Amino acid sequence: MPDINLEIDKVPYLYDTSGRIWINGNNVYRIIEDKESIENYKHLLKSPNIDKLFSCGLIETWIKEELLEKRILILEHKRIPFILHPSEYTNQMFWQAACMFVKVNSLLWSEGFLTHDSHPWNISYDGSKPVFYDFGSIKKTNVVSDAWLNEFYAGFLVPIWLSSYSHKTFKFSKEYRREHAKGFALELFNSTKLKKTLFRKIRSFYKFRNNPERLFKELLKWLHAHEPLKVKPEYWSEYYKNSGLDYTRPENIKQRFVNKILQENKPSKVLDLASNKGYFAKMAAAHGAEVMAFDYEEEVVNTFISSGNPGNMITPAHMDFNKPTSALGAGLFWENSFKRFNSDIVLALGLIHHICISQATPVFLFCKTCMNYAEDGIILEFVDPEDIHVACWKKEVPKDYSIDKIKEFMKPKFPHCTFSEIDTKDGLNRTYLFFQK
Image 1 (spheres, rainbow, N blue to C red):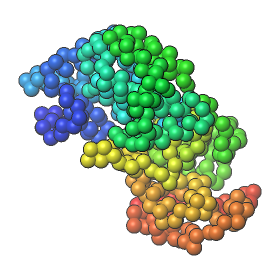
Image 2 (image 1 turned 180 degrees about the vertical axis):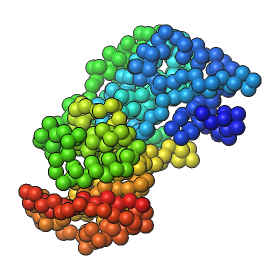
Image 3 (image 1 turned 45 degrees about the horizontal axis):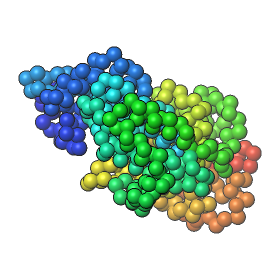
Image 4 (image 1 turned 120 degrees about the horizontal axis):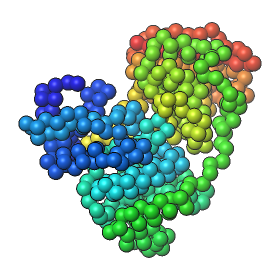
């Protein structure tokens, strides 16, 4: 552990009034300086329910050091590899996060604590598990404030209602969650008229704010009655028809090429773009990498989550390659998806022909997007226009859609390229390339 006495004064204050966050490599520390908070957190972390809280979804936290002469308590948190934006969940993931958050608060209340904030920005996924990570938001109290209920209403209950009401409102939930402090939907659903009509039942929860035990039971009851509608199979739902594919035993050219690079480079973080059901994400996890895997089809992501997550090393997300999440908040403090999902190696497999030919995104922008996520290298599958799955499209092929042009676009960041033999099995025409520094 670094010398706290030398480093502590360099850590800036952010939004947490009880302390400061210090990220040092793979370690996440919380520096608590408020006397009352020090005693409260020591009491909470030594309570008999603490392991139950961690199991439920509170970020795993332990006392690292107490500097008595400086009246400072140093906590250490389990590091979450990738922090998600509320719009990067499927509706099912978001609902699970809301249920976790209510259960955590119910357990906290049994110890005399509650979270000060109740919005979804303090929650992410650690692998397939939703986690509340803003430990500094936990305060000693026995009453749920109106502010807490207002935040939970706007941040959780409205988007969950949208995802459960009908198939027509289902997709509006994600659009609602894109908005941060301001936006059309936030203003609309915060109107007095809608609160008194559509959400009259929800507003009735306010009468239980002096009885948190009853309140959290009612909230959980409402959530279980409003689980998101089931997502119907989408276009790519049957892409991997053989669910028995063994990612630990690569069989074809593509699988062997990717496996060899992962084996030789041993990346600590891997990003799988348009991951589908996660075959290659699971391969990367099997090599010890922490993996972020996103796809733009909601049903595919939900299936991926339920299909198994080796070692809980893979964080799933629902996002479109062409619509990366932007930075926002005061001073754009909340980082964009390029920063949050930045990884040693990026997997861009079975993707470029859909983005550049079918969707007509310029090849240069495709390469730039991949490079924005990648630190050390990109494994790319180049699908020739003569490939059996592309030739039938009868779409115009961009003039710069070629391996030579892709090499040119990648060269400023990744000048070195190795590639496989051409894969021509069953009408394919594909080359697998690895771009690296």
